[in-house]
Image (cartoon, rainbow over all chains, first blue to last red; front, top):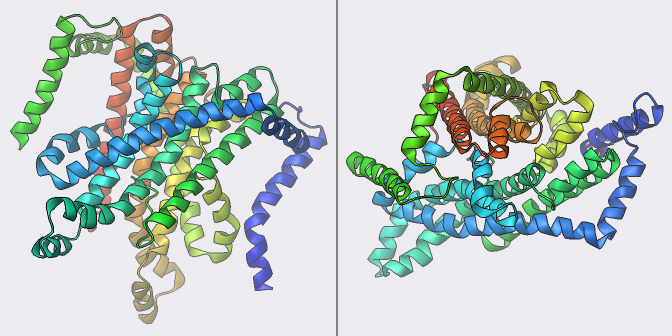
Length: 256
Length: 246
């Protein structure tokens, strides 16, 4: 009895919501525009994932998100670890990052459009900027809290600076870096979708707005499902990479 | 150190100002120009009206989202059946960008403030829920055992042990939520609104009023910064017994 409820309960809520939705859609009380039937949403979803042109839109969004994220990861790890290992750099950059942390960088987007154009570059630049913060803050935090005894032991055993960095500092910081990645990846998706909704002629965010303005709620929901699946898959990819690479420690930070 | 830091920032600003003397593109204003335009905007009613409209969306959204996040997060952390029923749905939808729900919310709740407040609430819900959940789970079992041993009831244990131990995590979640509330507010206003700072910056962009663009940018930055300081201040006052989390 307990076993059954353990397996069923997680799906119960989702199933209930879906059933209520379908009943509401079929009851005819609301317009199809507000509650499109799940069947038509599923049909539109099928059409989306089998249409090469639609898949290209997904790819456009994906490469903007991953491009900005990758840049932020490379720069962020470097800057964050430098801050963690050098008091001078930390003193100069920490106020900059903690002071502007709560400022919505999205407000820079209109200026970015003028500087980088309305194409992919302005979006990648904004994704880079938003993803930089979690990566820098987490790698700074990680590099700063390397166990001092381990550093002393390494030096005592004659490790050079490079060796200490490679064998002690980086392995100790890596779990933090991945925790930062897990925060940054959803942020990348959020920023891409928002910027595409605000100013774009391609990408998934634009498809959502386009479907809405052509009053195709079922198609819009299908695109929303694609975005949701992408966000979920990217998060799972980070977790998978982490579990393969950082097998010695698990660290989760849902907040930074 | 403080001197070096101040010097570093001043030289950055000076460099920017000097570059503007040599002639920058029209969309990059010098720091002094931005400051002058901001001073002018502070003297007019327009900026206050838009800022008030923005806050009237972000603050209720933040309040609703954090309230339900904390409530349901604490419930999921404490009651096992509720955890099994509710948490999987939250964790699966956590990495999904919540802003994509805005068009659907606009259909359901209209294009006015309600849909924006609810989308902000939805975005603010997640960090607080997850932090409250893990905050409860991370309560040291030994404290609960001690309380049980000393004859505390379930209610007393929740109030005196679990809640204080989860509170710092909840505050950390609220800090994230506050930053998120400003992002989502700004995004929602840029996508569809007739007032607010996000609308102002779009209007400025469309009419190439670069001065207005920087004014609204600075206003959002100040609001975000001030809100963050406020949450941290509240945390220090309310959780004075706690070591401050990094």
